[in-house]
Image 1 (cartoon, rainbow over the protein chains, first blue to last red):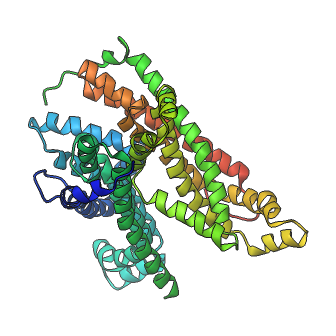
Image 2 (tube, each protein chain N blue to C red):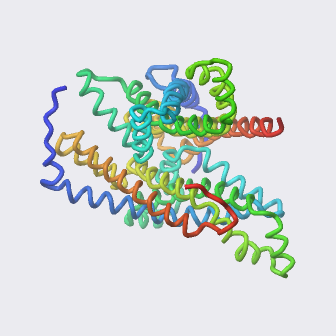
Image 3 (cartoon, each protein chain N blue to C red):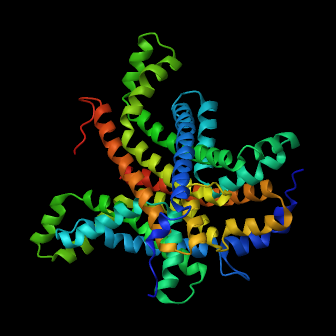
Length: 225
Length: 237
């Protein structure tokens, strides 16, 4: 028999602990997703710019990095970080650190491709004009190319942010208490899998759908302009 | 770093067999899920472009709900959530017939069907409307126009993005290890558990995934050239 009362009685644990990460466990979907998006994007900018660098010593490693990461499942990357980092640092790392590192490394490759495409969409004449007024290469990138490129990238960026937001559910595999893990914990006690997993599906949906609607509005505004 | 490498764990004992079994399961679940995803994607992608509103609304609801929820949640939902609602006899039957494989395959296919649907819809919308009008003028019904004109053209246009998402499907099949489908990542973890040689095991799994992905991408690049519509789209490279 379906019993959605289980959601009400565990609402605090699922949302406050699982989604926001306030409570007994160092967890939370949003506490993982927001820094992962920010850091992944910053690293992605460097990788995207490096892929377009003229020097082979810079663009080849960046290209290899992107191609490597894009050929491997995220689950695999999470396991790599989980085993490698404690070996390298000789000390145990909390799940939060493992998950955040894995997501930043993984998503930076995808963000890097978006940044590269965005930069390539800026007309060549812009760079020539910036050079003509006496800007250095770094200044051209910072003041002329990137501001225009980021504008072109917004729809793809939001899509990738949605992907990353959903991907954070995989952190539950290594025991990080996010929304998915919280539902698993409650389910182990209550045995109401249908109600619980449907509920968190709706919570995830509410977030990602709002993000995608925002992206669509932004896209329309850009094409109208 | 104080790690003793012992690569021989990969070919001594059970490891080689496990990796091979994992690879076979990964390919099996991915191929079956891909067929399901392609069927659902073509159907719902086409429905999203027809003029009849209820069909459009239904297809849109499917796409938006399924692609906006994490695949892992869908795996749990189809594997743990749905079977208990079925009659006792049906439950016993499916749990005797590798329920985790079918639930994982279904979750993967339905999730990627929603993503495939978006790609196919974009392909159909990029076809000039006059193609559809010409088909109607020839006396085809809407269904015939889609089956004989619109969908075949759209499928030839979408080879690159569809390849990309098919590779995502292959990589996402690794999520099925959470419901204990013995696919490649699961077997990699098993080798690690038995031999305590994490780096070797993970390297083996990673290399297999890379070879699969790079190989499929190379094959599909040739397919793309072969199916490109001459004169309609100019693709560089």
